[in-house]
Figure 1 (spheres, rainbow, N blue to C red):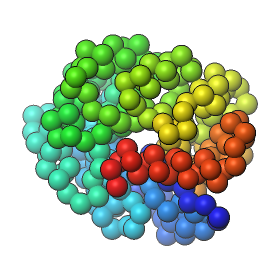
Figure 2: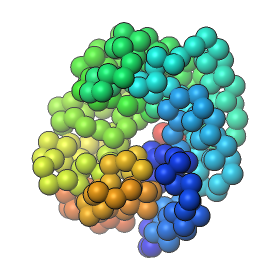
Figure 3: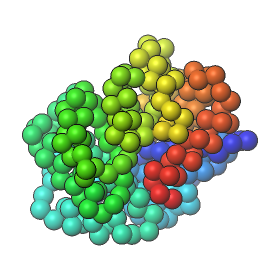
Figure 4: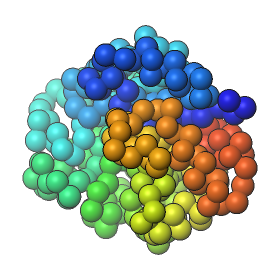
Length: 257
């Protein structure tokens, strides 16, 4: 590849990769995916993400409790996260947030566990990777209540409109786009991808989920981040090399690498 890519959010340590991880990593190298963030969703997967990142060049870990897993939160988890965030290659808290689509944890519990981790991020001075689904207004309201003690970070796998994106941008967040931006029936998402300032734009796969066109229906993997890059570059009318360079720099900046 003539350019490098940074997959800002993936789960390449997932069990769906356990039988061919070496081949997956080789394809990443072949297609210029030189750096990637491995994201935790509960305490066990966060520890696994750290171990994976520390064992692989170009990998970095993000640790936290996903809204689906908020109901598993217990006393002592924040202390463990605090200790882990002092380890090598652990860059942020995440993915945390609100998910009202599945509601796998009660909404009040999601809110409480999210807020606790937001406060921890501010205390430690680390960025946050946010998962927000069908809950943008509640999350924006929560962020506004935290104003003055709000860490920067990423709105991962952004799913809203340009109007919603502007609210997050006003608060200093980066907006990350995944496979859905390549889908034919995604005009509002594509409008957002066209308008987010280039210095606030990130790309990701969220693999093994959300495969982009032309890979829909197959297991996603970090090498497919190039399809996200190509689509957004085409939407914006700029060379993919320019978009790759900008999003790589942005990921390095937000993760403080």
